[in-house]
Every structure is written in structure tokens, then in C-alpha cells.
Image 1 (cartoon, one colour):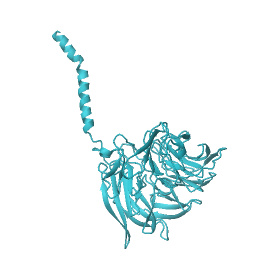
Image 2: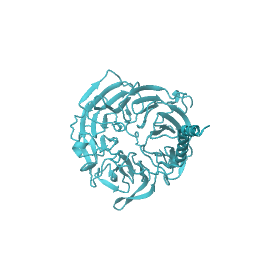
Image 3: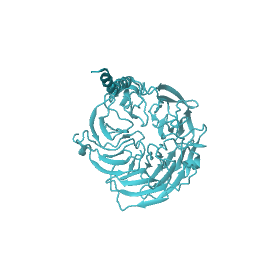
Image 4: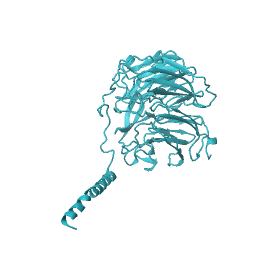
Length: 488
């Protein structure tokens, strides 16, 4: 080989050698890299996109203006899931329905499915009807759709036009119903109350326009709850922090002043009982508060603290029976265990434990389950060696994992619930996993691909043996009852 030929031979192989070296460098970086090391708590505007960009805050919306009904019967179906996190706001179905412990190879039978606008809004179920607040991009409208639980056919829909830009999906909230009324809270803070059976409009309310609420960065994530005919909302506006509105009339029954100027988060109001006092707990941007839910002082602040104050909050507070409250958030925020204690002046609040996301239980989007005295949740993507795993901890020390699903079984941002001593977990890609509900071990019973889309983040609903779940564009109803599975 001549000198020139040797040089040409070496030159021809430079790209191959370079690629090999780069591959080895990348592999070494990946193996030693901690993806959470550079994460900081997210604040709106950090991505360069102004909050509410392109949306007109003065837009006049005629809430509930349009209506259409269809020649469909609901059918007589048992079971209900009346609001976000179910009847008791704990994501646990306590109806005592027997559910299958195993499924056919292709998963539990699909009873029906429907296409939806892009979003993460879950369903509420009552009296054989499924309610979902959809967004129709073609019409540019929030649409409350009422479907038959039996077959998924549409009974009626009521909608109003409102302009929304896609921002990791559009719709996000779960309606609340008591079988007589249905109340929705749309992406741009529009509240609509309708008759649950007929769809007749009762009243509407624009929290941005009427109360000065600031729609959160990823649109409204707060889900309304109905308590004894009163819908509980957290406008967190100029003057009103929380309020109760009569479902039938739209009359303000009580309200809580926003003394600290706190703002609306993506979390929902959670009920609590402590020392004989019923209260509503809300984690706002600025702090967390407990408000009297009954008595002559209904709506008054019983306690408040800024010990827990984060810029982006999605998981709602988890209330423990002894007055402890677990709160968490994503984007590096971690979590905290608070203690609310009766005192001579009412109630006092102390911090028991603060946890970094790499060190213990935290969650980015879904609210943790409280089961048999333990907390169960999916660790966030900045959760260290347990990132995106389903884990269980005892609340006395949220850094000690009782069990974890393992690195081979990660769930992303998916939802979960408990029924018949079983845990249902849905991952980002639509894989549904069935577990034995336990505080001692992670034991998988069944698993199946039930959705073929992506971003399956919406809260699930379980009414009787019918599981209603969705990804970003399609909702399905599955039969998870004892007769539908392969085992017992």
C-alpha cells in the first residue's frame, strides 16, 4: 500500500471511529446521569410562553347556550362514580362489587368506545349516565356530553363557545353530580349547572370575569364537588377564595374571603373531618387552607398556612384520619406532611416532614391513595431510582418504601384507583395493570393494552363493574366484573 493509499484508507474510516467513540461517551453519560439533578421547580413563563397567551380575558361566553338531544335511552344500570375521586373523594370504590382477578389475553371485554376532543377530562357516572366535559375543536366549544353507561350512545349534549389553544390537551376536569344536577368547570373557568336527566340549563358562572380568577397555566384542573346540594368551588380570585353555590339556583350560599391574595391551582377541594368539625381543604398557589363546611361559621377560615406554597400544583391534598395532610407536586417541588391540631384558638398547623422527590414519596400529577394506613402513588420523573414507579409508604416516614413496582414496571403519569381489594393502574400508553391491594408487596394479577393512543392521564371512573377510562382522544368502557375475567 502506498503512502497516499494508506492516508486514504485512514480517512475513509474516520466517521466510523468517531461514531464509535461518541457512542461510548453517550453510553457512559447515560449510565451515570441523574435526570433529576438539573430539575428545578417549574414556574409559569419559564418555557418562554406568556401565561394565557393569545386568549382574550374579556371574551363574553354565553354559558350553556346550545343544546341537542338524541333518541336514546339511558337504561337501568347500577353503580355510580359521582365526582373526582369518587363518592368519598378517596379514589376507592366501596360498593362491594366482585371484580375479576384475571383477564383474557386481550384484556377485559370492551363494551363501548367513543372519540373525544384532545384532553384529559375524566367521567362522572350516576343513574346509568356517563358525564364528560369534552372540548370540540371544530366548534370551538366546551361540550358536556351525557352518554348511556350501557352502550355509550349519546343522550344529549349542552355546549358553549369559548376559544382555547391546545396546551398539552384542552379539557381536564371531572364533572360533579348527585343524580339530580351536574356541575362542570371548564378549561377557562366557566361553571355550568344543568339538570342531570334532561340537560336543562340551570345557571352559568364565569370565574375569570365575575371573580377575577386567574386560569392556571395548563387550564383549569380543579374539579367541583357537590355537598348536600351545594357545589364547592375555589375561585381564588380578587376577593373570594372558596365559595358554596346552590346547585338549583346559582345563589352564593357562603364564601371565604381571599385575604392573602392566593391564586387558583390545578388541585381540587378535598373534604376533611377533624375533632368533630367538617371542613374543606384547598391547596392554592400561596398556601393551604381549611374552611368550615357546616355550622354558623360555614365558609370561615379555621386554619391556614404558607408552609406548603408551590407554583405548580396538580395533586390534591390527601387527608389522613388523625389530622395529618399529605401534599405533593412535580417539577422538583417534592412533598410535605403537615399536621393540623386543635388548639385554644381553633387549629394550629405544623410541618412534620419535608421530602425531596429523589428521597421519598412524591407525585407529579395524580393524587395519592390512602389505603390501610399507607400512601400509594407513582413517583415523578425526578424521583431518583424509583422514578415513575408505583410505590407504597407508611405516612410516618415517606422516605421508606414498603414496596415498589420496580424499574421494569414504570407508569408515567397515569391514574389509579382501588376496588374489591384490587388496584387498577393505567400507564401513559394505555396499558392497564391489575394488582392485589396490599401494604406489604407489589403483586401483579393481570395486565393488558386497552387503549392505543397516548397521554392516558385522565382520572378513571368505576361504576359497578364498568370501568370508564380514556387516553388523550378516546374513551372506553370495560367490563372488569367477576364474570368477565378468567379467574376468581
